[in-house]
Structure formats: structure tokens, C-alpha cells
Image 1 (spheres, chains in turn cyan, green):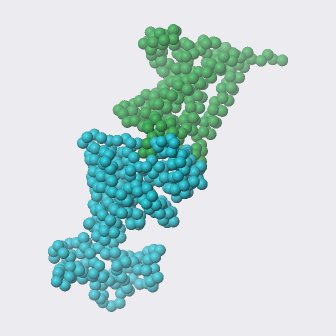
Image 2: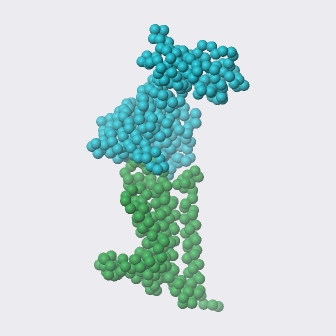
Image 3: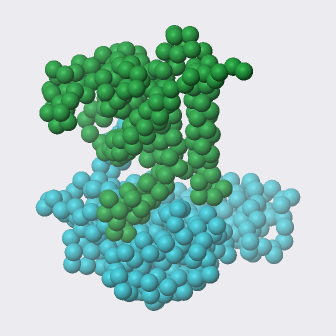
Length: 355
Length: 231
């Protein structure tokens, strides 16, 4: 269990804008993902916990041990913190073999059990055959497994991972997810993982904390956060939605209905409790919840005419991007209408949500 | 048949000995200074760096003058030395060691600082994170990572101390058989019209310097396999 309240201020410099981190969160067992775009303060948070950076104020508590307390002037050295750290570039010592890398990390353990421990870890992470090699002779996946093994060998009380999936191609990613799930099951070490990748977040997180400009803007299970982003910034960050500025024209709780004005068109939606007529809000809807068809006469109910700007091929889907910042995703097998310019986009009134 | 040139080998031997001792001292002092400059933040850090580099750009006579004032018989350091070792420091071969020390340490500090600063911070962070003390981090991680650059810099420093002339002349003097190093002996030989002896020593010194530089170049290439030459 890690509890942190971290405040850190960087003054603006001629060549860089200022930045302030002001964060409070707790992470229990399982995988907690710190999610955010670059510059949101994710890595700074990990570095504060590991002790590489000293926060200006706050308190960091790992289980029952105080790692940092600004008021009391406590700032434990990184080596006394028992935080495993998996670096973005793995940071395997290039002049040592894999085995030596693990031995270096095991030196805190009692001398007798050290060798057995290293051997055990090499086996558990399937790197026994390459244990005698140097990092530059290894594949990305092997390096990554080694860096996780090295971080875990000292039995840390929390494992910090800084964008570990970055730069891995698809099969390696899948393998890496499997390794982390295995670690969660076998070691039970709580993990705090930093990423800006929604897929990684969904694949691994039990809990996620969304960071923006050094603040936590939302937390909860990924499912919950993706279903109902706390605000338009979070929705934008997740990058999965159409976000359209609309005005509420009417609200009818009795028939669970509303009317929304988007540009020159009206859309029918469900009733939105707690909103008033005339509110300017953001409509958000996933691209796969919309459907599109070539325009043929007058738009029908809940359809908006739109001009097709481009189509983007995705592995399983085809993404159609329209004027007005509207994107629609259809199964890849759909008929190809790329020659058609004028379309109508249909909004399912039940699935419309607002922020 | 011509008689071979009469060559006194003492200056060459003395130069090698002086260079070896001063390089060893420069290595200890230089590594410590370089590590401090690379890792610590303190006021006047860049002034210290400049002061360490000064001997590289000052005229040898200026440096020699300072050292004479600093280490002379009547100076506090000179008196302390005399008290400890029973004789004055200036105009002994030990003074030649000091002279080359001032000539070779700046080179070492410069290269070693650059080498220390080139080490990816994440290796040091990783070592600390894995429970290493600062001492263990230095011996097991930082130093091995920069080993080749340090060795190359050491070779350069050795070559540099072999060639010192001005400072040595000013504080160790030119006493044949006692403080006359090879570069001074060559000067003497040329002045004394002993061209043959000068030629031999010039060739030997050149060959030695070339060999050392070649070694230094080899050391600076190809550490830790083909993919990490930047280290």
C-alpha cells in the first residue's frame, strides 16, 4: 500500500515553462496505472517515490514506513526505500552479464541464499540460457524480463514501472502483458505503472489515475473511467471519443428525452439529469457507436449531413473522418465508398452522453 | 668506423620515472576532482574547473614562477616539506614530479569529467535503487563504464608529463644526473653541439609518444560491443 501526497514546483525558465506537480493518491495491491500525456508529471511522481527527486512538500508512505515527509524533513535515500524500479530504457548495466546484473541487485540478500535466488529468478523469467550474455546481445523482450527480474530480486514492497511497453512491437507487448500478470500473481507486489497508452492501461490496470498538468483529474477502474470520463479534458486524453460542442434545447424527464443543437442541426438524446435548457455542453460518443451512409436525399431522424475528409484503415476497422470533427468506425469488411463525398452520420439517441 | 654518439641514458630513465609517478598521482587527484565536478553542485564549481584547467593555457614560465613562490625554501609548504623529508623540494627530481603533475592533471580532469558526465544517469539511479552505496556505485558501475576513457586519458597524461620542459626547468632545474629530464637533456645536447645524441633521444621520445597515442586511440573505441560506442 502506497500513500502519497506530493508537491513539487519548477519555476519557469527562459527555455521552459514552469511546472507544478500537486498530487494525492493511494495505490493498494494489484496494478495502478498513472495515465497521462507526456509532461503530465507521471515520471516525476515515480521518481519522487523512488527518491531520485525530492518533493517540496508532502508525505510518501509505503506500508508503514515513511519514505518522505516534508514537514518532518524525512527524505530516505533511494537505496533504503525498497522500491523496485523498471526504467524506461531498462538501465541494465552494459558492462555486466545478465547474471551479474541480477547478482548486483541480490547483494543485499544474505550471502548464502544469493546464488539460489539469482538462479531462481533467471528461471522464472526464462532468461537462464542467455544469463551469460551482455545486454547489447539481447532482444528487447529479454532485456525487459531481465530488468523486471532485477527489480524484484530484492523483494521490494512496490514495483515502479516507467512506460515499460514503450517501443515494444505488438507480439512483445502481448508477451510483456503476460509477464506482468504473472508477476502480479506470483509475487503479489503492488505495481505502479506509468503509461500514456490506452491499450496498455486497459490490458493491465486494476485502478487508474488520470494525470493532467501535474494534477490527478480522475481515478477509478479503467472501465469506469472510460465509461464516464470526469470531464472533457479526461475524455480528450483518452482519445477515444467524438467530442462535439452542443447546446441543450429541451429536456423532458417524463419521456426520458432531450433535444441538442449541434451546429445547424438538432439531435435527439436521452434526458440529462441536473442540466438546464440553454447549457453549453460536450456531447461524447464513441466512433463505433455511430453509423454512416452515403447521403441520399434529406437526412432522416438523428442524422447529420457531413463531408468525408479521409478514411483511415485500421486492423479490424475502417475509420471515416468527417467535417465537424466527427469520426465513425465501421467493420473493415464494410463496402468501400471512398469515392463518395457527401454522407449522413446517424447518432443513436440512447448512447448519447454529455460532459 | 665512426664512434657511436656518447649518450647518457639517465635523463630518459628519470623522465619515465617522473612521468610514471606523476601520472599515478594525477590519476588519484584527477579522478576525485573530476567526479566532484561531474556529480556535485556547489558554488564556484565552474571557477574550480577553470582553475584546474589553467595550467593548460598558462605559459610554463608563469606556472613555474607560481610554483617557485609556492614551494620555495622559505614558503610554508617548502618549509613543511623540508621538515618532513629533511631537504628542500625545489631543484630535486621530486620537484620535477610536481611540475609534470601540474601539466598532466588538467588533461585527466577534463577527460574524466566528460566521461563521468557521459554516463547515462539511469545507470546510477538503477544502482542506488538496487541498494548500492555511493562507493559501490562508483567502483562497480561508474568506473567500469568509463574505464576506457579514463585509461585513454591516463595514457595521454603520461605522454604529456614525459614532455614537460618549461616548468620542470624552473622548479627542478637542469642538474645532470639529478634533475635533468629527457626534454631538457635534448635542449642541452643541441646547445652543446651533440647533435647525434639529440637525434637519438628525439627519435626515442617521438616513438614513445606515438605508441602511447595509438594505444589511447584504441582504448577510446569500441567499449561494450558494437552498439554502445557512445559510452
